[in-house]
Image (tube, rainbow, N blue to C red; front, side, top):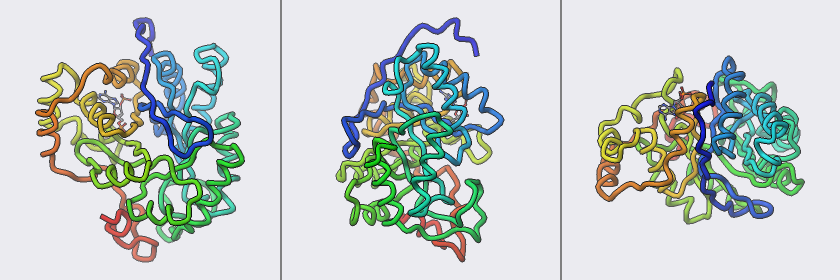
Length: 327
Ligand code: A2P
């Protein structure tokens, strides 16, 4: 990765999280760290370049296997003085299914912190509304190991982790409106975030409205359709309506998709290991979508792009995709 041509440092806007400890602000764009294990060295370089560009928000998870690489890159950035302190950064990690049991939450979080070489996270998310037989963190989870989640027990342990200062805020990922509603019936600290698949081809209109009413910020993952991954799709980047809009603004389709997401009041984590594309993905704050653009985007046929059948099984907690997503 050649940084010799790099000069601009982007100032990424932030959104305030409602139920964090202290006044926690989340940069609206984060660098997604769900890269293949063979790319962890490239990820370390990408994180250093991202920090030079102005990225301050990094999103990882126990399941991605990238906490160690991210931690090493951040330690190096601090050593080089690219950021003056850990407090300048916003770091998210996630609790995986094998540890989604009341007594496993805090040990799992401590393990993530150890891999990251950190004292605290900014945000800890329950990765999915599903538990599995306790054991090593892994994917895919054998279908016979899938278990219903003890929502109350897991959420109480999440709250305890915030109260202990192991994380500044807590939240959810892949939770439907109905499942969030369940959490809210007993939460003393409500979730700050729900991180879900979101892009112009899967706009999450109902969830966005619901979360807005509850003071929960939605974070978009796979905002470009995870193009390039085995399970990913080019349906966002190849969408004709988005191409037209991009052409009219002199922007790329990726920038249109990211701009649309932040205009919904959401935050977004986008992956790239490429310096030019990392830079391009930050170039969305000095222009706006027009009413005409919205007319086109609102007409895009809607469907999920990221497969979720791993979580559905006749013996498991969710027998159909409808039960998983409450669609
Ligand atoms: P690369 O690392 O080569 O840039 P998502 O965040 O939806 O999962 O998408 C990630 C994928 O999209 C990665 O394969 C990444 O590849 C690619 N990508 C990231 N930014 C852009 C961009 N601005 N234009 C095109 N592809 C991009």
